[in-house]
Length: 218
Image 1 (cartoon, rainbow, N blue to C red):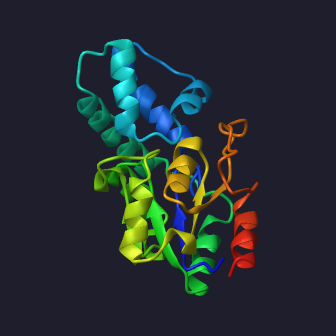
Image 2: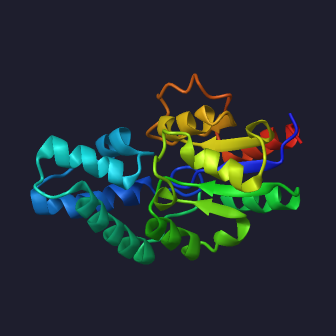
């Protein structure tokens, strides 16, 4: 396997933002007298794009507004909160991105977050400079777990899937990458540790381990 490109997820993979997503959702859902614990919310919705989570919430709880309107409220709240309480990078994230660039690899960000949500994190941590291309939920018609986000990133580089490796932390994201025929590495977050990742090619416990894995395939 000769690697030419690395495709990274954002939330839960490079940045510890699942908590902030849960807080943002609870702030929005408070107007409907709904509340989820961080654990139950993340176990159900971690890795799912905001609009898809909104569709489930609107249907299950009969919220009386459109999923797109609910998702918009959450986007705004998340962007506001993340400016005040920027979620931390996961250990080794920035070093891994810089190292990938040093190796001459193409680097893509493929996230299920909306553009405004991703922007607040990328700006706060000065991460955009590490990516050759960024695909958000707003850039695709069919989000993860559909393969479209990764297929679009692969096509952008004019490469084959066999020359790429994806790094994910949830079943939703890893299923998307694997369906795009990328070599798929999972680094489970604390909410996805017990998930079934049997479809993935490799499982790592940290981004440092991911770097070692990538190095072994260069």
